[in-house]
Length: 190
Image 1 (spheres, rainbow, N blue to C red):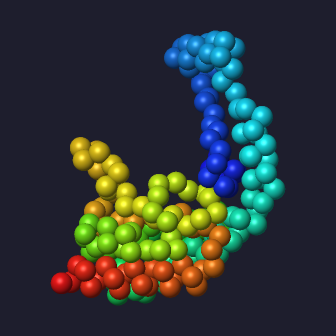
Image 2: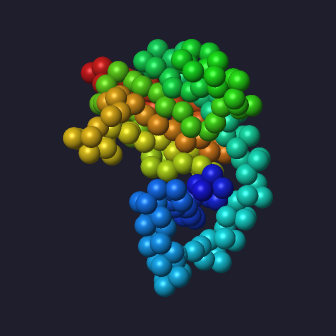
């Protein structure tokens, strides 16, 4: 629903239950009771915001995918980048599958730098890109995944940064990353 709304101002979702097994039937009855008694449905404003977002979805996604490809290509050749995770790159392990299944490769990417200190420095040094945890909006966001995961359940590599690409000009975002990577390199190498 984040991409459908597209402006980081609506929250929707769905719950589905299996009509086949007993657990699914039990949960479905309870959910119907909650929906009937307290009205667990989207408000008119949420519906309007989502409709507004749907009107520009195709244009936004196209731009986000194109920009994500440009960013991934830039990062893939950068000296301070250990690895780029983006299915549009031929170096991605599932590129062949993605190419068969997708016309474009999405507006999300992640990349790894050498360690957590450098990742935090990069995230802190960007200025056009905003540091936040979300996706699908008009603004490009970056987050250090490992720092938001509980330590006992941490699955992200310490140097991993995730980006949700927005609508800014690709060259502006590349310049922002270039400057941030240079700053982070100076901080971490000293």
